[in-house]
Length: 124
Image 1 (cartoon, one colour):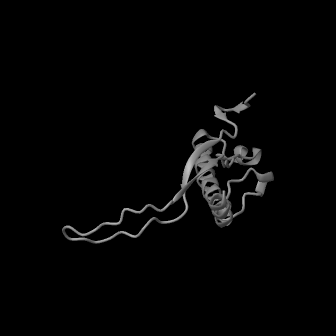
Image 2 (cartoon, one colour):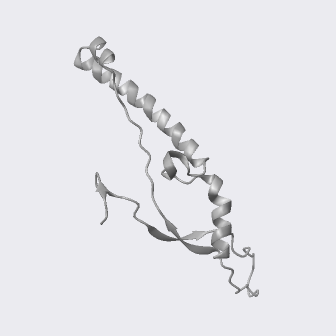
C-alpha cells in the first residue's frame, strides 16, 4: 500500500538515463571528409528517488501581540517569509554539498555521492 501525504506520493521511483561521461570529440570538416561513425556509451540506466525540502514560517505569540493590527501582522509575516526563504536556500545548498545522510537519510543526495554513484553505475 502506497502512503500519500498532501498529494505527493512517497518515494515514487523514476527510471532515467544518467549521462556519466562525454561522447566522442566533435570534428570539423569541409566537404567530403570521412566522419567518425563509432559509438561510445555515455549514459547508464538508474533509478531516481525524489526527496523534498521544507522550511517552516511561524510567528510567536509575543510578535503577534506587539503587532496587533492586520497590516503590521502582514508586514511582519512578509519579513519572516523572506528571512525563512533565505534560510531554506542556505539549507538546500548545504544538502547539495552533503552525502544524503541528514534527517535519517531523508535529505537529498548531494554532490559528495556523485563520484561513488558514477563508479557504481559504470561497473553495473
